[in-house]
Length: 413
Ligand SMILES: *Cc1c(COP(=O)(O)O)cnc(C)c1O
Image (cartoon, rainbow, N blue to C red):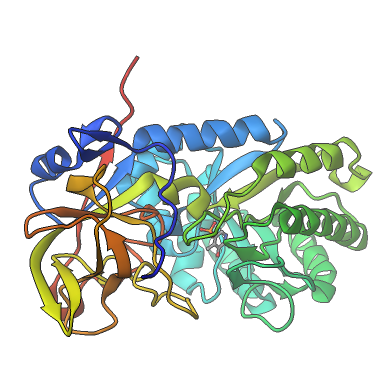
């Protein structure tokens, strides 16, 4: 038997079934028309943002990194609730524009921006987080040619990293950002060239559950920004302090202590050096904002026994849930939180593996889990499915195609 990850708080049972925002899973599937289906809870999204704002100093702005989930209704939902958006491609920038989000709230990071993406960013007026000196030259050249004053920031590759983060994106040789010792020269060059100087972006890692590690990294980020401001000779108008806030996916994971992070930040903000006194400070979060608000529902299409082991075979799989299958940057596969949605309050009574419909043994949603007895027709719920699901999985593999998606808006009061 292998343990399942912890089901996020906020889900209930109605008539024995999993309910999301007070609506039964089977009713949501009926409304959507089919399985597999991603359901995103508007009430949980709203609550997550409210809790975060309550914990953080009021001065801290909140950005949403849309690569976690760019579902258009979710972007529109977030538009009135976060201060800014971070994109990592021209395609994502276009998705925000289509959702009616003003480009002056958007910053664009990511290595390998093509000339046409730089031009799209410059002409739309979003901020470019420059990833290299070469990219900086191309951006200035395109700005000159198109007659725009570009909004330029520098993404720094810091010499430190976020301890304990699932994916390290700073420290040492990296394809991201510009090594910190070369940042001052480039900053001065951008300002001299007449660009609108937008400051620094310092992102150090993802999926950290240790508040102390985040507190330590944020202190390092502020100290580095102060030092770089001194060497550039100009204050930093905006500082994107990165993010890295993780969510519990696996057995034994504990939720991040955001109160501790907020308290430490408030203390730092009270004693900022002059170079950062007027700076607009923000964090950029993806999975922390949307991950736990998403549920992936798939239907059991077969139940079989092989060598004494029970398999529940669903119409979903890794083509929508690469991360839950353990194939998205995981070293050791562990079970995500999962439940039989149509028997949500039933006691577990058998050991079974829940698999997808793809013809590969990699396609596992839960391995040797302790579950209520489920039959063909029952719905399975994979939790923590709101981030890096639908668009971070190979939906076209084996001719399957994308899952349906649905945002349940919070009830009006
Ligand atoms: C991926 C990424 C994020 C979002 O990471 P999460 O773990 O989803 O919070 C934020 N900023 C940058 C630069 C990223 O590459």
